[in-house]
Length: 235
Image 1 (cartoon, rainbow, N blue to C red):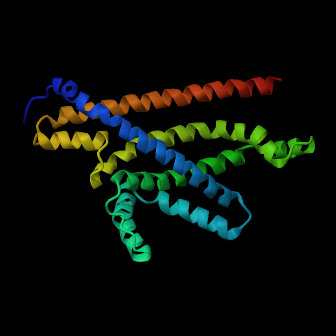
Image 2 (image 1 turned 120 degrees about the horizontal axis):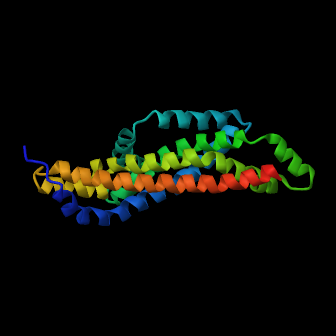
Image 3 (image 1 turned 90 degrees about the vertical axis):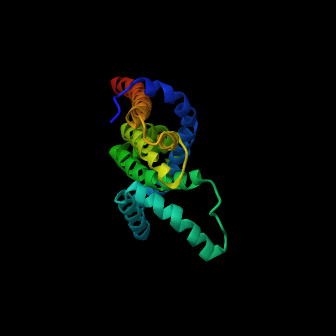
């Protein structure tokens, strides 16, 4: 076994870092789509329609119990067959990133639906009734009274979910998707496994730094919003 040589960490980082843009784009797209679908699911869970609640809760249970790599394979290998069988549309040649984004949007939506539901239910319903009683419409009361408080409650779980999504997205390399993880695996393969410890450690450092920055940003946002809540309570 070769001796550990830390210089290989710095040697290959310049080849890995340019692919951070692909990773960030994948995460951002998955978060945006996941929030949109998660909101629809949360509405279904909070609604009075029994079928809607059943479907929303069933979706969340199934997706949260499915490993990300398993769902990725199901989407990557199953969706083209489904599209061809139902609509005679061949999607085998589309970018692999589309399958990755779709997979993690579905997973993120399941998590976000629970985050939104619990955050909404944490706000006292009496505040909504009081706002309506002084002349606000239900929609105005929701956006001005309920939403800011629910957002503050949801922020820590949202931040943790984004960091988890960033890390789980690394499994995209299993279908040939080239982001920072995919590029790292290519480098290791081209080197026939030589100095793989150093190369993967360099990748780990990248993930550590990004995760710590995201955690700091989320905590700063939570602290800033917390000041506003304390001022309102004081007044």
